[in-house]
Image (spheres, rainbow, N blue to C red):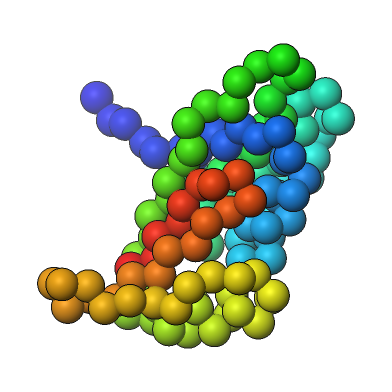
Length: 118
């Protein structure tokens, strides 16, 4: 059996804000919003066509699922990514040196989801 990772579903009560946030971080748009009813936009998580992150609206009266966490490795360029994020105007804490010697950057999106760059 082959299992292929295709992407992540993000659900938000503010899908356009979430879409714009990740687009500002530099993620490539794969699919623009399809409908006001369900939103349905997608951003590429890598340089390839997939995996992707789909952003969906949460229907009125429904609870937002628990927050999501995205994890990315950066070939040791965490400081460069930090500078790029700061240049967009997104507020984020400086990268930290971990107890094991690596450098991590954690960014929180407008829905409270975390993005970890390592």
